[in-house]
Image (tube, rainbow, N blue to C red; front, top):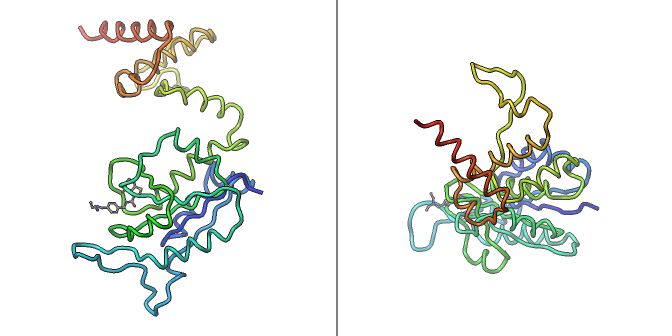
Length: 252
Ligand code: 9D3
């Protein structure tokens, strides 16, 4: 039995199954570490036009997804017997997804992800059928499918056995609230730019210190919000000071 199952309610089921079949998610699905099923509200319509949307009460632009086809799709997804389940509506109004939120969600046996289209869905479906509402950030996309795929990808990476040992260790070290250090590979000299000398020698303590300094420096430059939340140890404090000193030595 899979560790987690994702059930995505979507008008574009192939978009979700196709994208999830690649790479890390594709491998986890093949190995039955995770399971994925899709449910199309269109298949739960009862009228001859198969209407999944209707005009908004109160007027205004766009269409609103109807309650009944969404509800009936979720009822079917819930017929699968599981220990724990959550129904999550993906929307711009949701709580912003964080690694912490996802690390809690990966403990649940069934995540039913609702991907909306059009202007939105009937608010009573959110109230009656959904347990939570999640956003992928403060920008506009055209529907919930890509958001559902982001959730599926990020959670699958957290499941035991999905990443190799090296990748898991790396993930742990990066779950520590800093941006990544820069990476280099051959050739040594590229368009006149050399790879950092410290990385070419085999002094692993020096390399680890250089990488930590870069991670701290870049986080300080690009994401001061992340750095404020972090408690730096004495070593890290001095590495960051070195980074800033070296930065100022370049601008004359
Ligand atoms: C431009 C239309 N907007 C008017 C204020 C409303 C709107 C409706 C539907 C905006 C986006 C969408 C579709 N978006 C999603 O389904 C979505 C989403 C997003 O747009 N941003 C961040 N996270 C998410 S999760 C799902």
